[in-house]
Length: 135
Image (cartoon, rainbow, N blue to C red; front, side):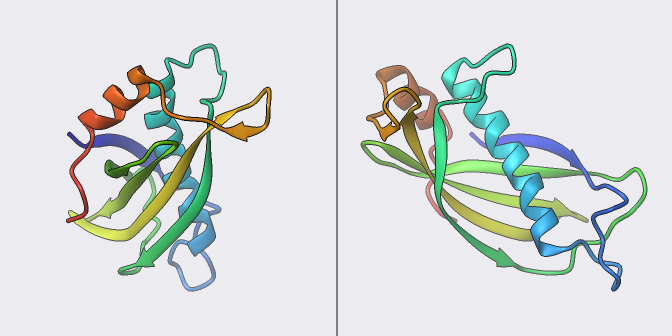
């Protein structure tokens, strides 16, 4: 099952060429990834999930354009579940096509000890619902 998260480009996102700056687009993926992870950890009241991004690989497939009021979608799913991490594949969709594809390795993290930790049974069950592998 894919997680879908609506995102909206901001007026400050495009560069002088009229397309969205590559670094700005990554923040949209981050918003979607954190929304997905917050659900996994049962996070509430603005507390961030106990997860950190350890690796990010990004493919810019086509130009992404700013259009006033346009809401885009980030589709996210799990490509791999490890002992302490999950690999999340994400696609930022515009005009019914992926403009950006990213694979992020997200590591479970104990904020008190500042060390990685194993997924809990509940976390593994949550992430498994989104497991599709890489397409």
